[in-house]
Image (cartoon, rainbow, N blue to C red; front, side):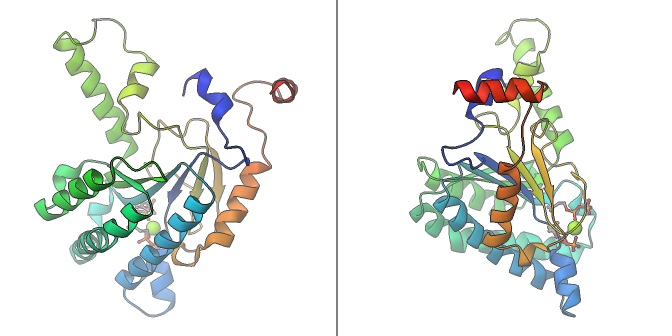
Length: 255
Ligand code: IPE
Ligand code: IPE
Ligand code: MG
């Protein structure tokens, strides 16, 4: 994050510009109902649809959702396979609606591990919505924060080796410019549902100065009222970015 972007961290109504969410608790939601885990994942998709509408109405600029981590391949093969099918069916059934809602889809993560069919759906979805200027919906799939930093470093090193960039020190700015969300503001608000209080290798680089919010609510039960509560908690915080509280107040009074 550059110093310039600090003054732009909230929208006019005080909402965060970028909300990043670890959607956790689908499996436990299903287990509580004596149902298979995939039913929880399907219920989780409904939550996603509702929150996209809420974020659009609230003029949130970016909503980033952790859909599948680089570690989730360790799950039982049946669950992984059902999740992949759910991604394909959800993308193909929802993308036209998202387009009508002026949503721009951006997928981040190592997509070469996905089936050709899923890669095609992702490319088509991104292409169809690329010129939309409403909510930017970032789906992190086969994503890991470590992978993201490594891929940024690799891009920079390739550019230096091939003479596109001068052979100088690798700076923080250079990594930021090559991280998978380079064109977007860093998340202002990070939410994790499901009760765990960890990052699980989500946007490690980008979350450096993000406000964290944890809730025990399981993802399928996380509705717009719950998101509103998280946003209200965010609005009540003072973001200091290393400064003192008095400096922040003085700076706010100048605006
Ligand atoms: C999050 O819910 C969804 C994915 C990781 C795909 P979980 O499946 O992790 O649900 P719990 O944590 O087991 O309840
Ligand atoms: C994080 O949830 C990944 C997603 C929500 C996609 P997990 O349920 O996989 O995280 P851990 O393993 O409990 O940390
Ligand atoms: Mg989980």
